Structure formats: structure tokens, C-alpha cells
Amino acid sequence: MTTTPAQTGAGHEPELDETATIARDLIRFDTSNHGGGRSAGEAEAAEYVAGKLRDLGLAPQLFESEPGRVSVVARVEGADRTKPGLVVHGHLDVVPADPANWSVDPFAGVVKDGMLWGRGAVDMKNMDAMMLSSLGEILRAGERPARDLVVGFLADEEAGGVLGSHFLVKEHPELFEGATEAISEVGGYSTFIDGRRAYLLQTGEKALIWIRLRARGTAGHGSQMIEANAVTRLAEAVAVLGRQQWPIALTDTTTALLGEVARILDVDVTQVAPDELVLRTGSAKGFIRGSLRTTTNPTMLTAGYKHNVVPDTAEALVDIRCMPGEEAAVLAEVRELIGDDVEIETVHTDIGLETPFSGPLVEAITATLDRHDPGAPVLPYLLSGGTDNKALSLLGIAGYGFAPLRLDEGMDFPAMFHGVDERVPLDALSFGSRVLRDLLATY
Ligand SMILES: [Zn+2]
Image (tube, rainbow, N blue to C red; front, side):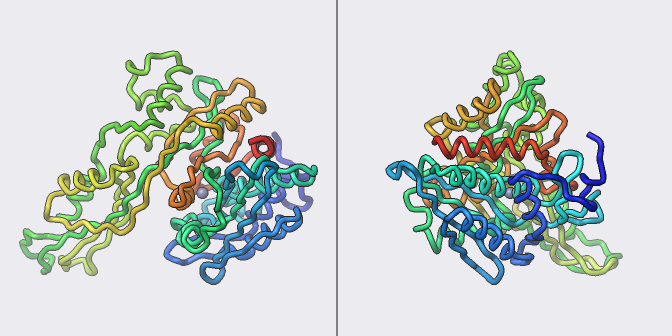
């Protein structure tokens, strides 16, 4: 598609449907979350969302965990109130964006080439907008969702949800009363396997363990013979963990995924290595490769203060992601790998999740997608990262990643998450809103 002046965002605004308009408006609120409590805050975006919910006749509640850190929750009465409720949630914060690296202003909500560009276009103001527009379609038609919905727009997901989902689950669990399942990021998008479109439904998340390594040694002059050099000791441990080839560790989800991929490719799953199968899952391999085994990525290093002084300590941070329930075993193996010379401190942990790729919700999702994109298979996958579903699981709520988007083959969707020039096709947004409307009205 050629780019006309109207599509660049300069001068005239292009004609956008409701979903794209809301997503664009949300991108224009800079809700950057820098972590460590530093954030632009979600308050203005939360007020905007609350206004949209009030326009639909709902009574949203706003919760401010810390100044400016606002989450919005509204309950929508379903047609059948005896059914357990469904939580439909998205986060309002985004990771920061450096405008110098982008080809458009990341907070301008630019529309060009048939796509909406900006931080949050994919993660996850797209879904926030799809939630509002699909709900609007249902309620304005005088209908109701099939069951009670708890609709949540949450703060602080990009820093672990401490001031958002975890705050609500701890301080206001009554908001989620009667709900047993949830849908949110990161799933529902399409990829191509052997030229055939397939949708990925997220049915699990790896656990995370963030550790600090600390090596101690002898401080001294940079010109001396120093056997116990803290930097050298730390560097050895960092290199071991960074290079470690963790073995394949399949779960129910990844076993089912590989089986489905093999079926689509018409190969024998026992005859092809899991890594090889994953390489044939199109752009989704960016998400799936990390889900087959533990990963131990060194991410930060700290040591020393002058070029000619050997420091007495050196520290590194390592981001460990492992299968749900494997945390203790993986930590023991990390200890074994790096030896006793280097201390390990656990800084932060979060649980892994795995929900079944079966049952009424999975069947409803599969059937709904089939009505909108006939014949496209739906495959389960395990997310290597984490979402607010971890917090909701503490209330016994089974969370799925389902933010439906029909994408073309050329789109490297996983690269858009926290990436430069994040963007989403306008037609994928309207597709997602239609699918969500259908699911919420019928499930
Ligand atoms: Zn996200």
C-alpha cells in the first residue's frame, strides 16, 4: 500500500474504526513503566478507559495503589448469572521507547501503511481497545455477554504487576468473586506453518527466578599478582550460565504443540528434533524456542571503580526462566555449574502456570476462531515470559493468552513486543474485535 499524506498522521486523520481509534488514543498517553517504581503512571489512560466504560452504562471502579498508578475494573452482568465469571484483562502501561531509534514518534499514534504505529500497539493497547470495542458492540446492540465479565485495565504489568494485578488480588479479591477463568495477552495471534495460517493460544507461562551472583576476592593494586580476583571469578560464572546448553524439558503444553506442528507438517514427531520443528512455526518461533528448555541469561554486570584497582567484589544479575515447578531443581543445578566460589542471592521469583488445552473455554475459542477464519488450526503454547495471569492464578483463576489477531505471513509479531517500530495492522484490530465480540457473546 502506498503512503499518502493522510496516512502519515500529518494533517488529516485517516478514517479509523472504533477499535483503532481507541488504540490510537491510548498510545497517545505515555504510560511508560521504567521499573523500580519509576513510571509515567497510568492515571490519564485509566480515566479515559473509565469514561468509555461509563459511556456503555457500566460502573467502573478505579484503584490507585500509589500516586498515579491506577487500575480500572468493571463488572458486566452476563445473560446467565449461574455461569462462573470470565476475567478479561489488559495492562495500560508500556515499556519505555527511545524515539531516536523509531521511524515515527512512539507516542503519536501514527497511522500509515494500513497499520497503527506506537508503543503499546502490540503490547497491549491493541487488546485494551479490542476489549472496549467488542463490549461496546454487545451492549449497544442491547445484548449481554453470555456470562458475567470482570473487565480489568491494569497498572504496572511491565514491572511484575506489583502495583496493578498483585495489588488488586491482595487488597480487593472480591472484584474477582465467582470468576474461574481469564483471557488476556500473549496469544490468539496467527503465524504460518508450512504456508498455512494457525493461531497460537497461550496455555502456560514459564516460572522466573532472578538471581544476583556475587564474587568476592582480594582488593589490590592493578599491577600486582592477584589470584583471588573477584571480576575473574564472576566472569567465569557468568560465562558458564550464559553458555549453558539446557536440555529440552517438555511440558503437557509443549508436547501438545509439537504434536500439532508435526501433524500439520505431516512428519513423525518422534523423528524430528523439537528445535527443528519449532524453526518451522514461522514468526512464532521467536516466542516458542525459549519455551522448550530452561534459559539462564546474564543481563547486568557491576564491578570496580578505577582502571588500576582490583575490586574486592563483583556482581551480576541473571534472568532464569524454567518450567513450572522446576525452580528448586534448576537453582540447585545453577549452584553445581558455577561452584561454591560465587554467592547466589535470589532477588525475585514468580510462579509458572500451565492450564489445560481442553475444556469449554478452549473449545469456545477454537470454535469462534473457526467461524472467523475457517480451517485455521489453534495450537497451545507456553510463554517464555510472564503476564498478569500469574497474579490471578493466586485466586484459582485459570488464565489464557487470547488477544486475537489475524496477521499476514510477513509480519514478525514476536519482534514487535518491546521492539522498535511496534505496529499492528488495522484490519487485524477489527478482526480481533469481531472475534472477541463473538466469543464474549456466546461463551
Ligand atoms: Zn504485555
